[in-house]
Image (tube, rainbow, N blue to C red; front, top):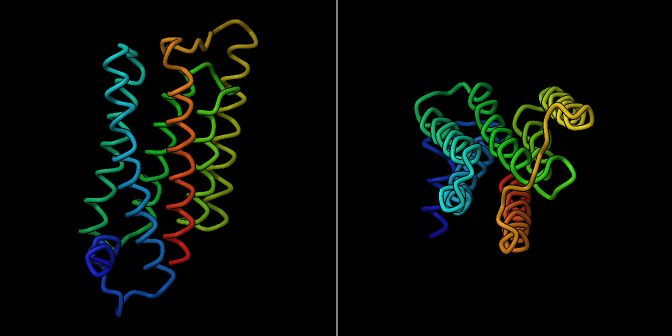
Length: 186
């Protein structure tokens, strides 16, 4: 079982020929992209069930970008652009959640908190800082839009499902952090 998991996480990269740090990034990329695709399924189902249009666009878009990163990783040996794709997928998924769940004062902002962490692991300090500044600018932009009454971020989740949706969000965030931690340390 472990051998199959190792083969999957290595995405066709040779563990003997690939430098350990690069292989660790490949494994983290594979794990993060795969987890995003899997975790997005219940959010996509609920988006259609509740007819939340923004989520019906952002969730499949994030899944598509993460899937593209997984495919590209198998055929390319250039890790940097693939890393940006994976980070972008998490950013897109977070954006859809934040916009439709009440803005930056909700648990969904946690998805954006993962963005610079993932970027730092995959791209190094510079990449993490760049994505971190982008996330900060995005948070401030959403705050500014709402504060100046140009946009309102109302929680579109039906009231009777808000607690369970927050639980699923929290579960997804903790799962993502555990995957990042374990794939980087493994």
